[in-house]
Length: 407
Image 1 (cartoon, rainbow, N blue to C red):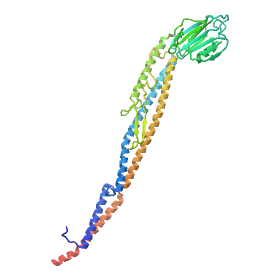
Image 2: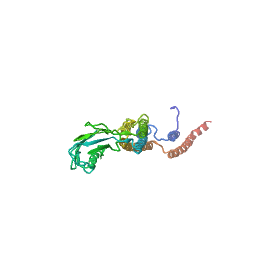
Image 3: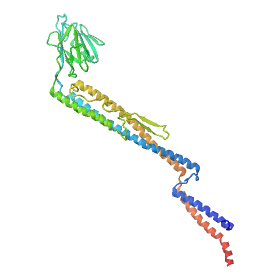
Image 4: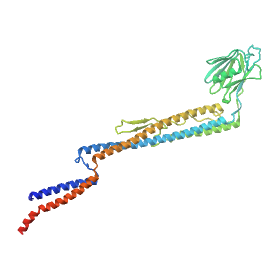
């Protein structure tokens, strides 16, 4: 209002009062917001630096949700592996029951081989070359190879061949070459009886030159005659028990598959072939890729057994136990890998939380007000304002004196 004329002292006191009011308003705003920098006008450098720190903290905080989910996905997979290990151990226990149960066959497969050579001595365990078996060539074929054994006066071994003189030498050669039969002296002259071993009581013996499948043995001979094969005779009671164990085993195998399929979190299953990628920083330059595995029964090398074909003897039970041992080792190896990855993820999760705290603290240091200082400023400014009002009143007293004269 330019039409109003104020004296110099009044104007000076008015300006001082206005300045104090502005400072008091600023101080009260800082106390209300807790910040000394609320806009870029307050301090451009601090405002934009703090904003950058807050933005980065916010970006990392958004990544924490994904990292947290990753931790749970790994925990779910680890829980699944623990359960799978217990199921494999249970299956192994069932297979071990087969080894502890009575032999599944009352009579094992056997066949006689009678010598037709020119020997005139007596065939004994110490000298099977003495009689008509002398010079005979016995050929044993399995699914994995062929062994040709010559009955002679010396002992020698080679790759797929051997020369033997005694019964012990013959059995040693058979065992070392994986031929699951044992030889014994028959009551018939110049005759050896070949019988399935205890572990492979269910195996078949054939008088053929053709290699068999599975655990069977084909026996043929030169300068000797292979007689009629006596097939193994199953024990009904024992086989019924073994069939029941097969059924129990198959239930466990099915549970292995379903347990692996159920070990998921938020739609991601590291035990069912899914992969997981976790990002640790806002620029996507730090991440961890975790490859999943397929740990159903097939993925662990296990499968359902067939009653009447599996668990028939100790040989087949040991074959299953070997597969279960491999599956157990695979689970332990994957559990170790998951544990290592989980440790890394948890360390990065803690690091991100601490880094967010550092960033937010840095931002606060640039923008937050010292409430104690601002409270003291407010008190001082209130006092100054009161003094300025009093001073303004004194400055007006001279004009009031003139007014008294005019009256």
